Image (cartoon, rainbow, N blue to C red; front, top):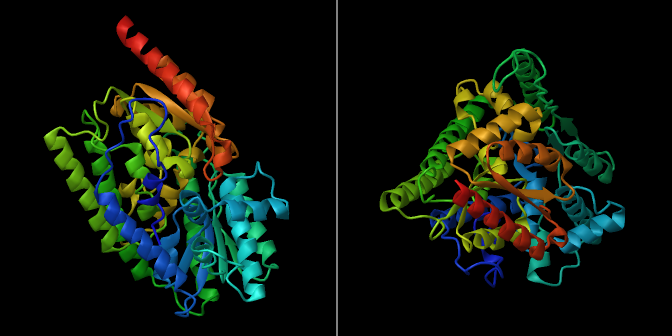
Length: 456
């Protein structure tokens, strides 16, 4: 089976994009090794039931270290939907979800995962591999059924209801636990990034729930929670996250040695994979390769002319396609909200000897969980750091949580002299994407950036 996030997305572009020179992005070689790690994760998950391990279905933020510490296997709903989309196998699950009554405007992550649950339940009832008649269907039929459900969704109301839908789908017979990750409104006078009374109160609130989550896992397995094992997992995650930030810093170089799309290929390793030495080694490989490119003056985009910031969720059907599209016009997408403002982005907050509070704080600072002023301030900081010329706003049609603030973000960028373009798409439903629209708007933004440079 090809891997989820590292290899498959860069294979979804059989022909060069129609607009531009036809140049392709120079992908980091280390992501191939990252693909093997992702393969290993899925193979381990598919074998969990046969090995007698219980399986947790969860959605939302980065809580797998609790499952790892307790010897459980886990299915991340968003990751599963991204897997299907990256492999262009999402259609059967999405059709099953729509037939059940889940509207097409519902989050396509949720719609795809819920549709897969419908297919998997039917397969179990019929005692067959989901009516599979090809290798792709057989792969999808491997999704193991849940013994527990956990929800830990910040900011997104659809995400907070998603697991309740799963709970009802399984007849309300599977134990479910909800971790509330409240918004950081930032309305108090002392509010700031990682500071203020609201920040401290919310940190305490989520920390208490995470300890209650450990008790929930104990209750439903009959085993004591291993806090030392949690500390061990978080020691690896913290180090991997530190190396990732070092990689980001190296990408301030001109030309940029890696792009947003390389970091998309490396999300899985800090989002839902186990905290082990393997992920530390992976990010060390990335760092070494990037440092080598910087020393040799090599860029991920040949003849880099423009540096862009990607705002919005990723279109998993089109990762490789979009990477090559921007490379073909000399545009290096050097950073993004989805990659650079999430996934253990503040490892310094984590005390590996007592990691719970630092974990809670990293969950709270999911970029969409901030009030708009603080979130925009952080985006502007990244754009300044990476000397960004313009912003690409991916308007993911059913994802209001990610797109609601984008006009405010673009307006703030304009005041700093940066151009923006908007194009519509989606995370897992390719039918929302229109290539001609992006071509036209990308061409217009480049003309505007060129005119701005001539005027300057």
